[in-house]
Every structure is written in structure tokens, then in C-alpha cells.
Length: 502
Image (tube, rainbow, N blue to C red; front, side, top):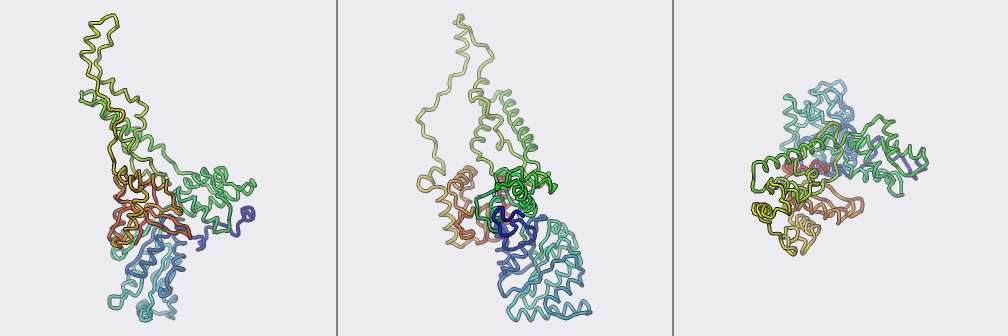
């Protein structure tokens, strides 16, 4: 209905998986590359998990298209198969005629066919969609199939695509043998607000749109909060927002169009920051109370707690954009150092009031009393010279020759030349190199003491020169995955983190 209005050749936000609309952002492209690499070079069962509507089926379809020719696939779209039905489905996909045969005969026929494929230099991969709905007996039969081998060579590889409920099913005691054979785990991250704009316009361009960005910042913010970053919800809201704009005969998508789409879809925005602000206020109140107690007990420097709060406020970099969180989930509790802003309105000179005695000032007509007050007052502290040079920081030394951007870009290129690392943690990537934005991120990383862990790698995205921002280097994918929990909290909350392999 609205295609001609927006200059589109096909609907851009259909929820049926179409590989031309595959979006490689938010760690989808990295997972696809890792799956292809794992199937080509490694053994073991692979698990891909993600929330409902996160794009698992689309990823599965892309994998079917991208695998090299020597890898043949068996796609099980219906997971609610009994163990016998699954064996029949696999045998049928291998071209075997085993109608009415017993399970033992079917297994023997499948093994013979797999050995024949192995001698031809081919590998067989079974892709199970919606694996969380697969019965336990069927999952156990998959494990038995995976055990088939010739010498040290596995005849079959398996990839399980499922919702997080799959993890709960694998945690059951009778599933531990299957779980132990899972060598790679990948999780589909939701779309962060920073990536959402790129996703919306990518889909529009793929559908034939050639104009400027039509989604306003307020519309993007509302789509992000009401969809929780899940692609299917994003597609539904974006599609109905286009229809609402078409009805108004406008080409710009505003918040009111998204609100109309939300009402029609019965979606509500997720709660944002009120609870955290209350917690932050409590943390600051506790900090100020500690300062009052310290002053009450007569410490030498009663202003220290407040000054520490102010200094930590000036040293902490601005928080990155907050990734949409599921409803009712509170991530990490803010610390006092992260929210000292409530104390900042107090004048800088106010701590000095505490150092004065309780005697009131002497009137001018009483010179003797005035002398006594002056005698009991603490001597004034010497002020630093106005021309004093501030101490030199590590970032000052770096920028004296190279900017932080140039410094970490050179470190990234050196890392590629050495070829000693296997994996790294990708914080985010930009499809266009924005030096000023990256420079600001690096300054904040320097203040966090994490600058040496940051590497910038040039990359290409759809023919455009972009940039990957990596954190740390690790000898294996598993070590890198385990290191994610040790990232600074602000990085864990702000970025759609993924594993990057060299």
C-alpha cells in the first residue's frame, strides 16, 4: 500500500526470513562467520540461542546459503519430532529408502551413508531450528548420531538454534552428556539504540529506498524501548509506522506514528531510569552522610569525602547510550562514584565553613575580641600559583606525538601483523570512520585505565570503510567469552558485545 509513496520495490519490514534483508550488525555477521569457520575447521555440537524474534531463523537461512560446497546440510524445521521421526527425516534427506525398518537398521543405514559421504570428501551438518521445543528423547538421539565416526573423524555435525529455554533443558541432569559435547555457544544480542537506526535504514535501502533517513530520533528511541531490541518487534512497529505516515501523506516517521503502531500492536515501552535514579540518590545520600560523620568526629580534613565525590564526578566519563533492557530487569546498581551530581550544587567554598570555630564574628567596635577571634582562627592555606603547570598524564604523552585514535589504530595494525592472538572482544563497530567520536571514547577509556586494552581495526561493511573497536586479546574463543564478565560495567551495559576471531 505504501510502497510507491516511499519509493520502495518491496516491503522492507516483512517478518518472514528473506536473506536479502540479513543485517550483519549486532553480532549477527560475526556469529555467521564463526559458524562457517567452526563447521569447516572444528568438531563438536554448536548452540545458538536468542530471544523470540531475535533473528535465529534468518541466521539459519543465511548459513544454508553461505556454507562451502563440500558441506551438505539437513534442515529440521519441525523440532517436535519423535526420535524415530527424526531418524526417518535424516535418512530421507540422505536419499535412503528405509520405509518400515527398525530403528537399529535405520541407524546402520545412516552410518553407512555418512561414511560414503566422508570418502567423497563431504561433511554433513544437521541444523535444528527451534531446538528448545525438541523432546528430550529426540535430543538424546541426536547425541547418539553425533557419536558416529570413522577413526578420529566425526561423520556428523549438529547446530542447535533455540530460545533461552534450551539452556534450561540442557541443564537437566539427564542432558549432561549432550551438553558436554557442545563446544561453541553463541547468543543473539538484541539491537541497541545506536545500531537500530542503521538497521532500519539498511532494510529500507534493501527494499529500494534511495532518500534520506526518514526515522526521527524520537521515533527510533520509542521503537527501541517498546521492542526491547528484538528484530521481529522492530519490523512490526516500523512497518505499521510507515503505514501511519502514508495515511498522513508525510515521508517522515515521527514518534506519533510509532505510538499509533504500538497501540495497534499492543506494545508498551519498557520502563527506563526512575528506579535507578532513586537508588543513585540513596547512594549519594549515604556518601554525604559519611562526610558529615567524618566532620563530626573531627578529622583533619573534614571536606575530604565531598572533595572525593567531586573529583570522582569529574573523572568518570559520560555514560554511553543505554541498551534497551527487558521489562523489569535492573542491570548493575549505580555506585556512588557514578552519580555524585547531587552534591555538585554545593559551593566549592562551603567545606571551609566547617573549619571555622563556633564563635560569632566580633563586631568592629570590639577590637580586643576581634584580635582573639583572629588568633584562634586557622591560618589561611597558601593558594597555588596561577601559572602552575598541571601534571602530565599518560594521554598527554600519547597525544604529544600521536592522537589516541592514531595510537590505538597503530596498535590494532601491529596486532594483525603479529598474528599471535586468536580472539578478541568486539565492543562495537562503525560502518563509517568517525574520528572525533572514537577519540572521545578513547579518552574515557584512558581515564578508566583501559586504553591499552583497546584496539582499532580497519574494516569494510558493504563496500564502506569502517572500524572495529576491540577489547583485549585472548588465546582462544572460550577464554575471550569467559573474559566478557570482567569487562567494565559500562561496557557490558552499553554495547552489543560479540567475539571477534582473527
